[in-house]
Image 1 (spheres, rainbow, N blue to C red):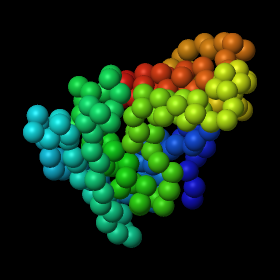
Image 2: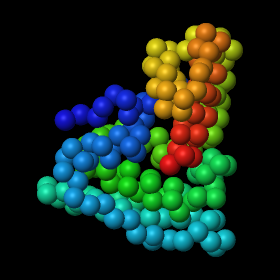
Image 3: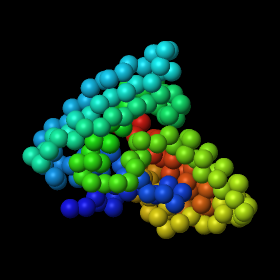
Length: 181
């Protein structure tokens, strides 16, 4: 059993798995239950950091991991939902162990920070960021945009995109998709 390609998101050259994909694969591996416990509530004293513990159980074992979320680790649209994001991250990490998927879940990263980190690494390299970003989007980016636009019922003009705008579009579409859930 392997993860269905429709659950893999390529964001500026890095592949990420979706929580939805991990859950799908976990069910294929006979997931019996998944339980989340809030270990730390966000407060001023802990910089509004929520920590959750997830326990996933199959007939082959128990898988436990933790997830955290704070205003510094999520994008601005998710900040009001810190506890839910910590829960999702904990479940994603436990399900990654259960399913033996090594790639990071898209929900585990801050897409705004990821965009800034990737852009700054391109800007500090020996080539010009405008050279890279002027290139057409990758095949994987186009596939990801097609999938997300279908999920969101949006028409996207693929001809107008370059690598940077494709990455930015993917980020905003992912935010919109997960905002609905």
